[in-house]
Image (cartoon, rainbow, N blue to C red):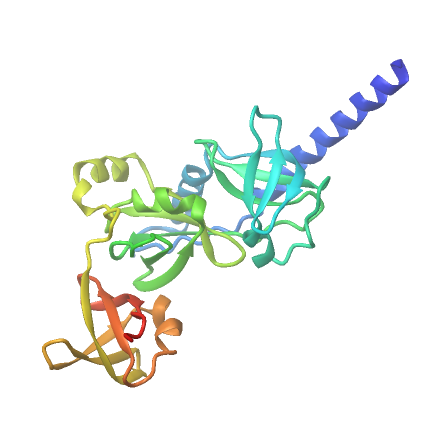
Length: 283
């Protein structure tokens, strides 16, 4: 009996050592990419700023060891020693190209200071290739809050948002400096303000946060010119033809539309298309 207990203790210690090492690997090798907008900032000052912003984003993150209890068609049920099990999105593992996850496997789960999921990977997987970028949300998030346009280094970049990070991204107002953790599939896994000053500014300007329903204009009509040079033209319900620029994150979806298709475009405050709905054909 004593030998069995000792063996279990040893196994537990080894597992703790492994998860501690994995915790270090998870983010100490994270490349930090923080475009600087201050032309007069010195090399040392920029480096220090980048480190401070990275620390701000990753502050409170911790890695825990999880045991897979079950795998369904869309979820991974895991036990991390809490009262209730956790459920991880299976799609995320598939997008990252992990080997098939099965019952009994060990996973490393990264959670943030609010105990919310940031990332996960198999225990024996190679270190994740993450990046941190600094920028500002350029426009209100679309309905569903699954995509965002970030202005960084003078350019607009479109990113999909992991489901676990959508509420955090949506809480950051348009135009407020923030840092974003980008995972190996180029999706946002976490986000926060660059500093306390930015967070205080956000509290003073709450109307700039993305509304839950998305405050955008709907334009219905029929496609007269398919997507070309980032633009699509429709004949609106009042009979006039109107071109619209399409945001990069939606262009692949818009490209499938044909001349004569009936559509409803969701247009943001910059008069650019951020979502599209195709009504069912009338009988």
